[in-house]
Length: 133
Image 1 (spheres, one colour):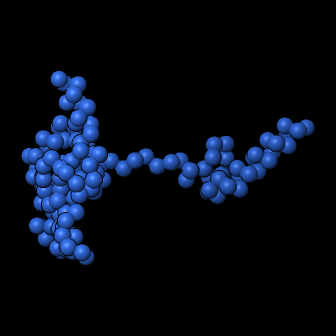
Image 2: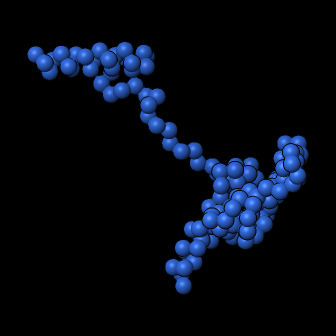
Image 3: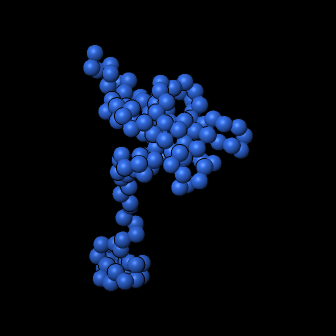
């Protein structure tokens, strides 16, 4: 029984479902099966989001904290936008993925102030020159 719950809970997502008229979006925060369409069948509405309201309006984003906590406890995964909403409401802390290390200078460079490009090229040429002699 527990195994079935784990499999189904991994398939749940908390995401936005669009409604409203053309050029007048209105979103519901829903718990849905990941395989369903964006505006398709859902399990429960746990909030709403009206992007047409002013950013400082309290009614722009409304979340049911207790229901969100329940679904997160069951194993539902929130979308990136929902995590942002929850962070703004003080319910979660967003983790930023670790960046690649391409912005750092290469290993073996002596002067990191040049960004590693000039020195890395010189050291690689020197290594090739010593390898051929």
